Image 1 (cartoon, rainbow, N blue to C red):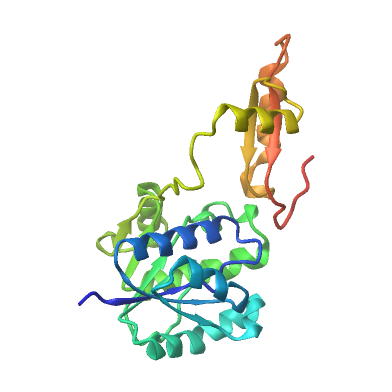
Image 2: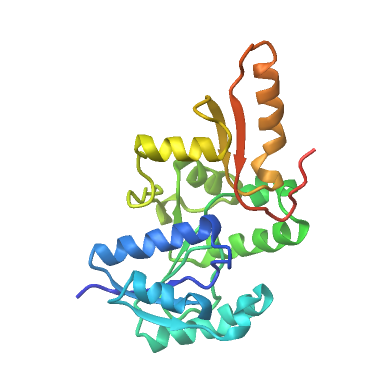
Length: 246
């Protein structure tokens, strides 16, 4: 019998963003692979995950965990209770943190170590909190998941993590969403953006300091200075914790 895996989706923010994409894709792929799944999520996401993985047990956390401080407090006490409630054999927490007394083996995803290597790219509160949380997960998690060998090597170098407890699981691609568009779709988007078939350089992502969009703009400007008909620069995505671009 396959172990029952409880995936903690409560950290997915309202605007979903990259974490939402990661968690949704992970849960859908695990379900397609035949995993015995349970999901705990925000109340606003209960219906979504019920549709995404109809064979899984979906548990909505309390309303209060929509606010990060309450969610982090609930993670320590409420999440282990949910793991017990759904008879989980393994708990997967996909966003750095974990309960100190989970009651079951825990797998934690560490997406990157920029809280240590580039702390100025995060808000001071986030950098301080996640440094402590990541150190705890490195010490206490049964396994650590990372999306690249570079992140694995940084965990070992920066925090002295045991490399035998780290698994590299590369990000997948959801081909139902990400696929080559047909000519009509390309034309429609090009016209809507005012490009009308003109070449372009594109950025798609959250507008916040660690994405270094100002460097992209400066680099693009320098690269096209002497071009008689330069490609357009197209920026798209949501705003982050500091969206000022000089």
